[in-house]
Image (cartoon, rainbow, N blue to C red; front, side):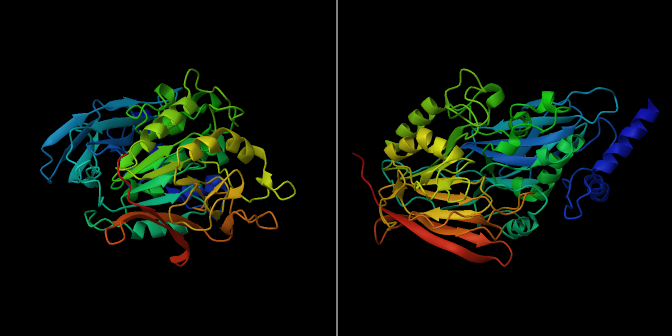
Length: 488
């Protein structure tokens, strides 16, 4: 038994050694950064790793982390000051199968904090008294939503948006994100949370025995961000499974993605059970956000129409958007996020001969576009194509307006250039379709979406910027304005 302990100790040390990991990958451009709290540890005495938070609503937040081996209790100590005089417990589970005592099995811990005060700064630690606790972090709860008495001005908000990240070519973006986190993390906030629209770690692009290591390495690259700002995710095609038959049984059907995150699906009536992060919605200030699943559970979906049986994504989407649309005088903005784009002039998606979409984009258009248009969504934000592209307001392949003032249709933005392992895509259909305003397949970057109310002009404003990560300059910027609405 002492020998087993020593071997396990050595294995954990190897996992925390990026040089060892790089040699195993055989990819000189990959230098993963393990989660900063992976330390040399003995069984049953390992600190929490991969700590991240998510929005449930303005009075509830989800805190999640991984531990090597199962802990006696999943505990969060928290409070409005550093005394941390409150605590809450949650659940711990693992999808990994242990074949022997030498296997390193990661457990996923989730705790939902409830009865929080909106718009407040909280301090917290996670872990277990016996197995180790984390350093102290902070988070901010979402602000109080607008109400009938005072529908505006709403609290300003800013969200970072990107997709297709991984660990191989994402360092430029990661470095810029790190610059946006104040030290210590407290108001004033530069941004409020992150929307990562799929293809998160690219772990299935590596050898099968590296799958969990790559996931952990990706968490390590954004660890300090995820611990202090909510990190909201959508499923992409690289989250489906590990990509190899040897590890397929325990990773199939988006298992790692659904286990490693805790989104507000249950609270928003979205996907349930083992599909707990596949589609959901949440509010922040005067914006309603919807995250859809572009991979499964709709007609001709690329990964299966009914992968999660008895769960009707389209019926839920219709109901959620209709409810949000009826409340536009309080939350005028309606943003839908998904991994795959609908409007993309990449050669795989746009046919210049027919002047129409093709492939998966065409199918997604058939299934989703009418729902978006009928419910007057403002933006559809996506990735998948490893490039950047922005549209005019449009519907059914037709530009409805070249103005973004009270636009008559949704704006479609593809922002999939956060640094994926496969490189950027710069293969565009020519001529450029009339609906495409700008496209860029040569610069890594991320989006910034800001919301604010202008009481002088009585307008709601959403300002979008695409930031080049290399030199921190603005590659594209525009704003959508909408007149204040009254309750009908």
